[in-house]
Length: 568
Image: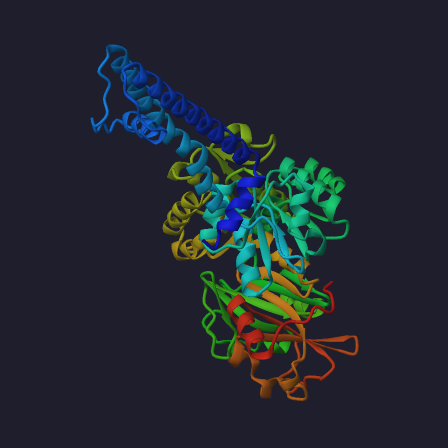
């Protein structure tokens, strides 16, 4: 009964519900007129037979006959009376036993159930709502973004136009509001003018409509939209989007940058003057030694962690370097150059990289490799998708002859870019079986398949939805966080009061949280790769690198983040 006012309000406001109610009332009126007419005719015929009954008895007889109960206590003796009884009986069967239940269910019960369901899916937010993120579609990118927003305890609302879908998502625990995406009043009801950000991640045409509609209601709210085509970028910008992301292009370029054809450092992120890079340790003198024994600190670089078969491990002096180790380095451009000069002669390969798949992601990967001056061959099943003049092999990558023709037996790296995770897992297992020593980089569409691909043998797995969600979070947090790789962030925060004046060694942040301090900012100056004896200033900031879990532990231990500052 608590939802009765809400349900009645829905029935009164909804146009279809009002129409159904009117039809039901019209049917009941017709039925009432029929019963009244039969009651009058009952009296007329009974008087004609020489008997008299009260009006209540006449109504009683009409309802008993129409409902087919037939008690038999009152009957006609004439043929015309009995014929009248048959008419009342047959009309009762049609109207009371057939039309009334159908009409009641169709025009009252079903709308009532629908109204009860609709009352569970809110259509507006409280007037005091502010600082929330509005999402207009639920797909892998939105799911990844919701996970990050929930971890940061940032309020969000998912706008869904279909009621059944809204109820399904609501029952799964998401914060849902039901409303049409192309109505300005919808965004007014969810307080878009006071939102922190609006993210729309559907098809280009839908995103354009959303951006244009939101901009009518909220002139200053930041709008982030995804785009599939180059032409859509300009259109979405004209519609009002502040940032347009081509996730497929971003993912392809990121995959191409992660291809290691040598042992040199390759920058994967920049945070003001601080550079974060990865370097492949395979076939270098680093293999078989611990980080303490390798003494890379003498080159000025800070080894903040290592990737081992897709798992990030914070760097410790006793960490062992293997052929599958990918070093994560932090330092200035000069410090990384010192590292490259030391290891440039190792692990150089002139064999082409194998790229499986020639969709948007595959083409962007190939373009990045071309810009880096690296040879490549694309394996594509559909000949029409291979651009003219591009080195490629037409066929199914699951066939050994096709992979051999592409050069899989000598290639330093294979990049798997199809948009089907099952196919990517299969090809990862297959390529790892063929070449235990090859670098395998794979694309994942769903976040839940990241660990599966790593277990299958991929050295690096990157997800477009995760990358897009990371970029949106970076925009939302005004540049204080930068996603370096799947599950690895670099972020800047003010020095916690409990750590001010203590040295890095005394703070023991790495042991407590799993985060590694890679820079200290004080007085406008950034100290990159600070020593363990460096004191933390009470009016400064620290730049840290850590996994999402380590980041969460840091903020749980030392409080929420600050939104001051910006990254380069």
